[in-house]
Amino acid sequence: MTGAMEPLAVPAPSPVPSSRRHQIADWLREQIVKGHLAPGAQLKQDVLAVHLQASPGPVREALRQLESEGLVHHIPNRGAFVTAVSADELLGVLLPVRLAIETFAIENASSDPGTMSELGQLVERMDEAARHGDLDLLNELDVLFHETIVKSAHSEHALQLWASVQPRIRMQIHRLAKSHVSPLAIPEEHRALIHAMVHGGPEGRKAALDEHIVASARSLLAATR
Image 1 (cartoon, one colour):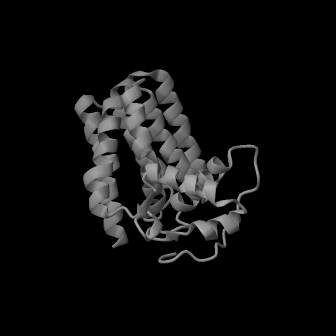
Image 2 (spheres, rainbow, N blue to C red):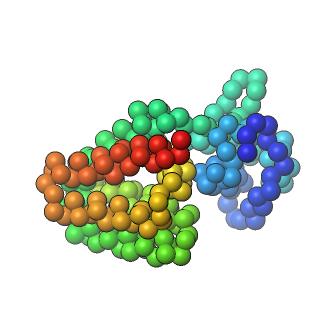
């Protein structure tokens, strides 16, 4: 979906007892992250308001929230559009920030038996999702795996930085996952990272994390060209 926003084929969310702005933002975020709204697609407030049976105010507020998350950008006199992240921006900006955060956290994660057990359980759940071909669940478990590493640092600054890039990282994980040779390759990559966390020293863990985050993305991007 590119260019001007067309009538949406995706069902609108059912009413839930929460802020209408948050409900709309949550729904739009999922459409963007999972590729139902493509990079560059225009998000027209009037179309969204009709589709979601909402007044313009909550739609406008939701778009502002997603703009703060980096998923939407506003062009003066033109409107709101789904953010497009180029390969250069991904490799040169987003992934280095992500790598720095996780490199800071990985030593704590590696020395905490509870965290390591949780990471192992997540990989087992990835295996099951991959066997069932549930790529959406597999991708969400991928995000949760790395969020678990970040949380293990117990650092407010690390968590704030992670929160600032997580929506865009999540979007890229969903978009690149289809380029893997097989869904089963995704849990295997995480299993290899766990092995390095357990058996490698600090430099080995850093190298494994760089391979997992940056080198893997570079390879997947090359496969999409």
